[in-house]
Structure formats: structure tokens, C-alpha cells
Image (tube, rainbow, N blue to C red; front, side, top):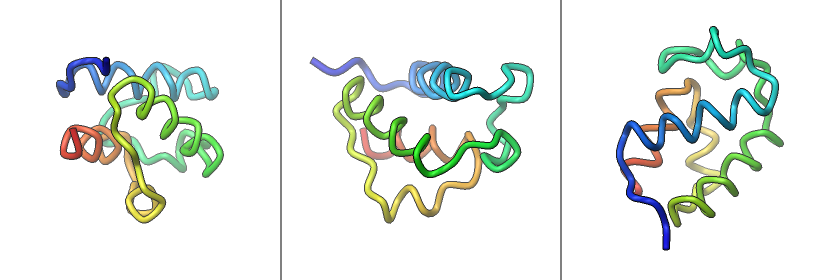
Length: 81
């Protein structure tokens, strides 16, 4: 069963994933652009799988292409949940 989707839970999942991809914890904030964190399309594909496993939310490539910031990721997941 997927975890409950709250903004706080999703933010923690996303931040933890971005840090595991090599982002500096002190740089990860909702307004931070993914390019600043050196997050690439492969990282986003892996994050999409993590989100699907954790929350049962699928992120389509058309959705992912619109993501610019950490906050965009969180908002997208919460809106689809």
C-alpha cells in the first residue's frame, strides 16, 4: 500500500532522493533549480520510480519536462496523489 501523500512526506522523499543522487543537503530547498543541483534526466527517471513505488503516483515524461525546481517536483506529486 502506498504511503499517505502529504506535502511534508513527499518533500522528505524528494529531498532524500536528491541527496542520494549527489546534491548537497544545504542546497536543497523548494526554490532550488534542479540544474543548480546537477540533477539530470536519469536522476529524474530514478526519482519517478521511487515516487511510483512509495506513493503509487506515475510521473509522465510530459510532466517531468516541465519540472524546474524542487518545489515543482513536490507540487506535481501531491497534485497527482
